[in-house]
Image (cartoon, rainbow, N blue to C red; front, side, top):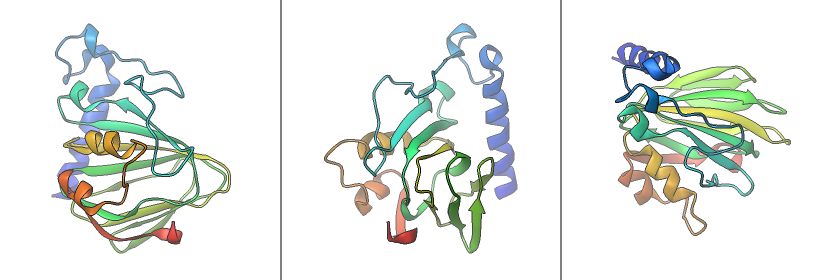
Length: 184
């Protein structure tokens, strides 16, 4: 089953790379959405759970008819989220750059990502990651199908958000199942 999900993810990414010829687009010209480096597709700033870490939405859920949501975490600081499960989507991680590695656990598998490495975490499998660098890093995240994940990041980027609220995770098709790595 997970092999089929990986193929679906690859098909979505391949279709999106075709720009105005994408099979996911309603209209050829309106499917092209350019997003400059360091900016968010919505034009609104989004913050990650930790101060000074920005989350930029690059491909919005509605632009792919719910098939995909992509975001970039820039100025990423040491640490990461608590261990959690996505019930509704696969999550793809691509470590773009940083002064160290990203420590990651997907199920029972432990990984150390270096810049340029990526991994796909299947739905229903617990996972957690932590950036180890002392200098800011950068990662891309893709979720397919997008489900309710975009609204999760909208909510958690608000100044008064309780980021590790179990009920927020549950409302968005996820579950907290353990602490973050590194005690972050």
